Amino acid sequence: MGDEVDSDAVLAEAASEGIHCLPVPTPFAVGRINCYLVEDERLTLIDAGPRSDQSLAELEQLAGEAGHRLEDIDLVVATHQHLDHIGLIRTVAERSGAEVAALDLAVNRLAAFGDRVKAENDRAVELMLRHGVSDEVANGLREITTSFLNWGDKVIVTEPLSHGSYLELGNRRLKVLHRPGHSPSDTVFHDEERRMAFGGDHLLSHISSNPLISTPLDGSPGRTRSLIDYNASMAETRKMDLDLMLSGHGDPILDHVALIDRRFAAEKRRLEKIFGIIEQRPRPAHAIAEAIWGNVALTQAYLTLSEVIGHTDILLEQGRIAEREEDGLTIFEVAG
Image (cartoon, rainbow, N blue to C red; front, side, top):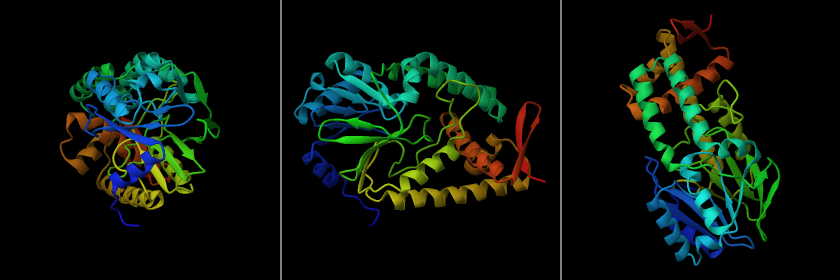
């Protein structure tokens, strides 16, 4: 199968089978989020978009075009913790009386949204400073991400879902698959009978899903090894019997195996590039990012740092590089 996907045709066929894509605006560069309204015994909304008047108005309009009111929704499902996916869940649930389902491991994090995000932002600043990002950039980025808090909201989960369990909608049952990497709570919902899945941001057709360095879901000290986690998750997803994955952004995915293979190939190339930069001379992660992308924009500092640290995690695991502390910085160098 080629790379070109007739997105409109695929989504029209899905709508004829009771799955309506509701593309809601976000304030982020990734663009609109694809929420999905699933017609079944339980009218189900998968993800809800960021909390804003515009997003709510468009969600209402799109649901209406599909023949439903938000007040009719019986169940809202969160695919993961990012605020462009969860921001309106509480609003929809309060208006409709809907149940809210999400991964059990994410329940506490979703309920404590504001406090946890602020704490995560503080940890992100510490991580950036330790890896060579300037104080000005690190704290400037914290101010930006703190301003985004208004786009999110706490989520009270009433149906916690364990990995491997099934979410029953009526005529559909969705297998719950924890696929951490892009975020610690990424969850894929697999309709095995229909050979399709709702993927959230686990796989995106047009861009790679940034495996962001994150705080563990339980709030414990340390950080996720996001790229290592993501690789393991993609390897499991590659085994799935799928004809279609409906993603949180961009076009539907009709060949997840080919897409995952492209992601792995691109990662291997990036891994060797980063190793080559470290071979030239030891340096911290932010300096590696600058060697790849030049003068990194403030808004991209954490994304690029996550990209580099994800690959150094792999190189450390392979024993090809080592790390040492020098004047408060983590320095990466060739092993031995």
